[in-house]
Image (tube, rainbow, N blue to C red; front, side):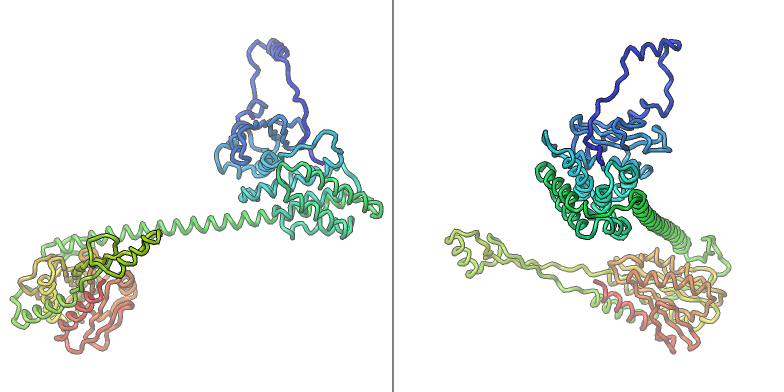
Length: 599
């Protein structure tokens, strides 16, 4: 049943015969095809390199050639320190297409690799040798139990090889079932050991082996099958070098069969029944493996699609950032002019009507807001207390006495009698305020109060912290920078009118986001949108995408409306102002709250 320990002397070709064969031609070495035995030498050498990791041994030789000396698909010769593999297992691949040294190449020939892993398991765990004079039948039974034992032992250290061992079972088990060396009850027992033994070590699943289990129970009987199951289960726990125990299990196997066989009727077509049942098992295992492979391929494809989607998202985000940077540069570097969407100047459509000096009320409002922002940005100093066995620090007498007592007792002192308090000032966060004001024809009432509010906020922020920045953009079809992000306080109020058409809030928000870094944490960030939001669906969708992205980044987004007909932009905090003159106070309060919430 097993050929793994069968050693034969390899046949050799005398050198003289090779020389005479050359003279039969023109004296040149004979041409070799790509599939000649010599072409497989490299494959065998690379398999030998992989065998070191599989078996933990570096003293073994691997030979790969068409056909094997043993007649089996593969064999391990412990006395020669050699593993031989039939090159036919790699069909239809040719040797120049096979590169076992590359990890992962084995997935192209799983059956051949599974047989090779099986032989590697023998090389690693078949370390016992039958003593001279042992009963050949007992040795054969022990070697039969060894088949599943070594695979179970290999699976403990190399669990990822289970798929290959399942594939190799079809190559190794079916020849033994179709061409048995044992007949009758012993044939059924051998099939149980080869198939159900692999089930019990986790190579095959219980559901897959049900056909063989049912047939063996019918042929052998429940009692004998249970006895044989206990024997191979005990053999699975046997150490690699324990020849005595393995032979004892082989003897128990033979005794159980001898005791039960005379009373068991043997079906005339038992060989055919066993062959059919084993084929059902192998087909079921193949179907399971195919389903697992399909599921794995689906998962891999899903991950690849997700990675591509993420890459596409990153590319789109990078493109948006570049577009936002270009928009901000064209708006804020235009010298106060109006620009188109592509950044080109649009001088004939500017809403700016001129500038004026701030009123006394506006100057007072800026001073009050500056004090409020400074108070909101103030952070108490933090205290950090540390203990130490040595100075500096304040001495605790109780802790010092405890330390002395620990030293006197001969124990490691853990008391730390010195306490030190460090007080550190927390930096005050700067402020970032972006104002986007709609200058379409329906927003005329907001022009004067928003112009005043923009100057007040910019003036107060500059007086509060030199790192604070504010900016105001008027938008319709075009974009116009009313205040640019700078650390200098504006000297004059910029007046503007609302006589535009259409809307371009999305690009305005991109320019403010890039110019003020509203998406970047560490500052008090506020975005104020003054609009009635009576937009088309596309304009609303583009604006809402920017608003939600800023809100997710932690920027407060406030929408100011003046009429009851105004619409709310999703993601914003809506504040309705029946009196436009209250806009400066509302924006000032929102800015104060934003910097107070900053941590």
